[in-house]
Length: 384
Image (tube, rainbow, N blue to C red; front, side, top):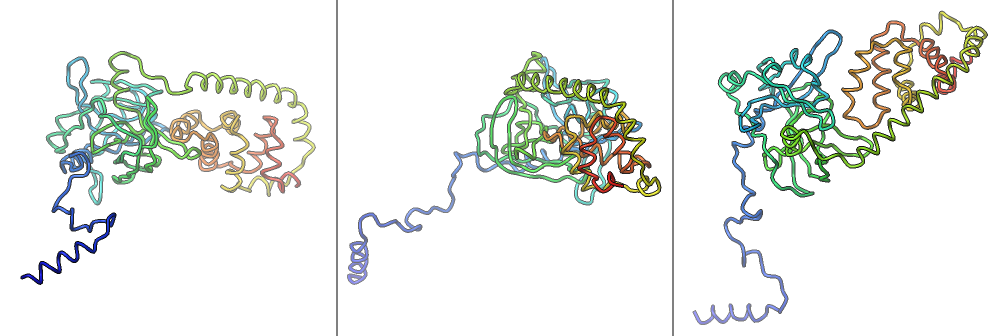
């Protein structure tokens, strides 16, 4: 026994000041590291996941799709059970009336559909990008066994906090992504979690509590963002909200530039109209060859970078239906880069128009006074 004590004391005496203690010196069986709120109720995960739905609407020539969720919201002291999504998914009562919400669409499950009821409730705002729609809550709760997510003001949050997004990207079965908050700038919260077309209107969750409705993002600036619940609630109750940073100045600048572009294009088109007619008469093309050549997707991608200032005017020249132009505008508000909208327009034209030939596109560009863009994109054709 004396030998053991002596050996232990020797070991202690050999430890130098400043030496790190071993893990065993301070380890416990269990430790709380997150102020006591790092262990969450698993029921929150199930409830949040199940409340998310796939939304689709087919109306005449318009087809829209996105995500949404079943929520419980209190307005003027009255509780309402509703479906919430984005304004750019469903922007009016007519679209909402033909829309369907599909729940339990995940894994191998086919999902359960239910029509929305905008006649019961309908609120929307394009800047905050939210739409709230009435629904058959009894069926969702009792037949689909889904509880609504409480739509309340978000808890305090910080940059670096983890967020989860349950979503239906590209109309596919339910998926989720997670990352961290990168910026909080009312009325939005910014994050790095992945989304795709069809994810619009998804829940943004922090510790599986709703903080925002996912809205849109920017490939160029590498972010996604959602509208904070508190901003939506404030708008519903008061009609006001926090103006986005640089909102007014950017809108005025964009409006001024757009007006200048339109006037410039019209002036250029008028000045060159006679020259264009002469050019079209003088330039003879092999009709059999040119009128059967389709532009490639790579060519259209290159051209889309040149037509950002007048892509809608070109769409009209190509006789693309106005409803398609509007659909593209709304479907692609997820992308701040206008090049994406221009490219989507060209690809839609290529898909829908049986006369989507290089010559058709070339003539449309020339009629707008943009022969240079035509020459850059189709140099070999112009030399024929």
